[in-house]
Length: 68
Image 1 (cartoon, rainbow, N blue to C red):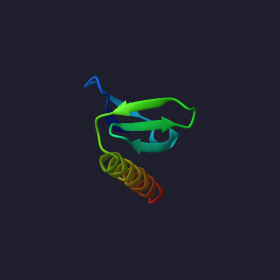
Image 2 (spheres, rainbow, N blue to C red):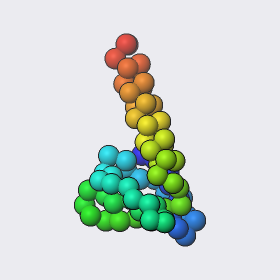
Image 3 (cartoon, rainbow, N blue to C red):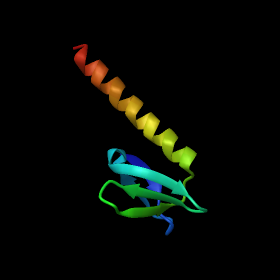
Image 4 (cartoon, one colour):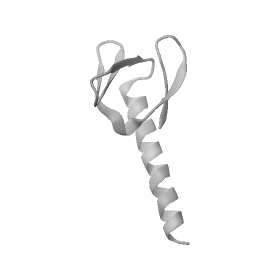
């Protein structure tokens, strides 16, 4: 899950594995795999960094648990 900010300035968490595509024209629009579109305040680059950080954290947590 990644934290994003809607255009109403409300923060919420989004399941990043449900993202189908991200467009910027001029606002950032995240389209989910079910077809729902969400406009957010963050740039595409910010969203991609948050996804990479989340995936890295999940991988590290799984790696630590498998070492036990």
